[in-house]
Length: 189
Image 1 (cartoon, rainbow, N blue to C red):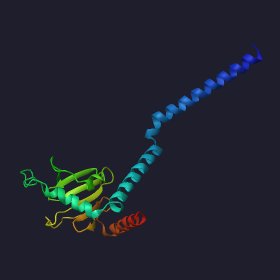
Image 2 (tube, rainbow, N blue to C red):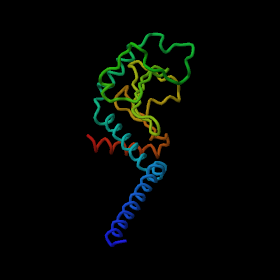
Image 3 (cartoon, rainbow, N blue to C red):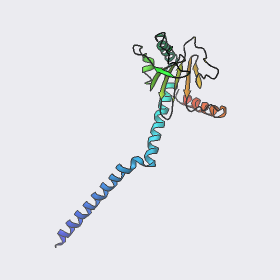
Image 4 (cartoon, rainbow, N blue to C red):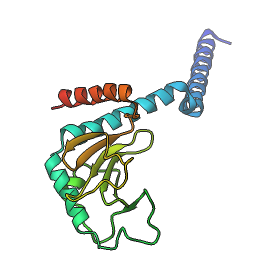
């Protein structure tokens, strides 16, 4: 065999070996990367960032007065018997009925869900899954239905309450979480 053929054979073998190695590495990442800790951390960081962006939108970039007005507009359009059904529960909610329009102020914040609570208020959930938060909107004449009832975690305006899973209803922790929300609002004014 000549020197030239040997060099070409060695180069070909090297190229084939490198290609096999690259394919093996690619296969490894395709098959195992989604289950790795790094992939999970990347996914969780993305989810946390998305939730924070939604919090900023709701708390800092939304006209709360317009949101309150829009929520009360929905509540005023409900049929009288909508919440007075035989299946009424102590707590729970229903979807906004067909024919009741969602005002633009609510559409603009792209909520995850808009629900009517059986107690007669509107819940706008901005994020679900591992991090629930949003606002509750109460009609002008709302009366606390029971002693243990919580309007939300933070009053934004009379009748508009922010709720957040980050509050755990422990006075010490809630003060700390409230400071985090204050900081978030201050940073994104």
